[in-house]
Amino acid sequence: MSKTITILGNGSWSSALAKILTDNGHPIHWWMRSPEALEKLRSTSHNPHYLTSVTYDLTLIDLCSNLEEAIQKADIIIIGIPSAFVVEALQGCAKNCFENKIVLSAIKGILPNQNVLLNDYLSTHFHLDIDTYGCISGPCHAEEVATEKLSYLTFASSNIEVSKETSALFANQYLHTIQSNDVYGVQYAAVLKNIYALGAGIAHGLDYGDNFLSVYITNCFSELQQFMDVISTQTQHHYNTSAYLGDLLVTCYSLHSRNRTFGNFIGKGYTVNAAKLELNMVAEGYFASKGIYEICERMHYELPIVNCIYNILWKQQSAQAAFKKIEKLCS
Image (tube, rainbow, N blue to C red):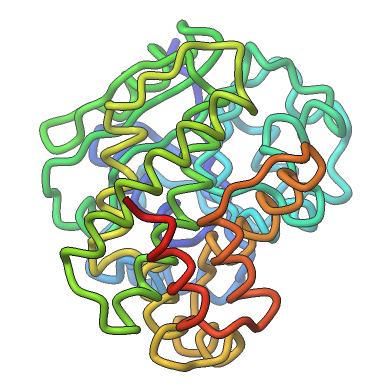
């Protein structure tokens, strides 16, 4: 008997995952916070806010407005709620709500204020077993999934059977899947690449060219590896794979990247609040920069490029001055 699936979240990435699963013929339960979006999808077969060109097969979708009921209905729970809103969304859920379920994180961020990955939060507050947890990552923009451009996703779990089982649900002609046991490394890499992509956007807004950007990204990749070797020593990290290098490259260069776009506004002189209003989406790198900075501070460890981006976003340091420092760091 096939396992049932629930998706929590209504953003572009959750919408892309819903498309992949239903394209593959898998029925899903789909929870949305917004009753308006839910009813619009029910009446038009289109998400009114994200990937609006996608037509969903509603015969395969059970739209849900009650989060805890949506969790109870499924064997596999995919959490695609932006990291800034996860804690609030799960408030009130029973402590054992994830018992005997596989939980997949589709969040490329750490939880603000908590400064922890999703699995650590769920383990502490909902008694989640790490062997029933996995994450989805890799260079895969939702907008390209919507148009069925060939993409690659990594499914990482400390339990390789979870990686195999969940990746098989998504594999099709336009989505290739990769299994990994590096669940901590893949998640931290996704967090850091959002910060670095935001910095790449700032550099573009400041009118730096491709030559500098290539050197900047090279140094970011080196800094990422140094951090990983300190923060996550349990598993060997394969840095030259798509979940590490590939995701960093596409997020720094692509016009689909919301973190790059957010940074571009900052580089052009927008305040953080003005950039948020222009983007009208959550840029995970904004919160991640503060979270990683505080983690490093606690560890007495320094990530110079992350520090510069944190100072621009959270300490109102001049972007021009901060990037003069980054120029000296790059080699």
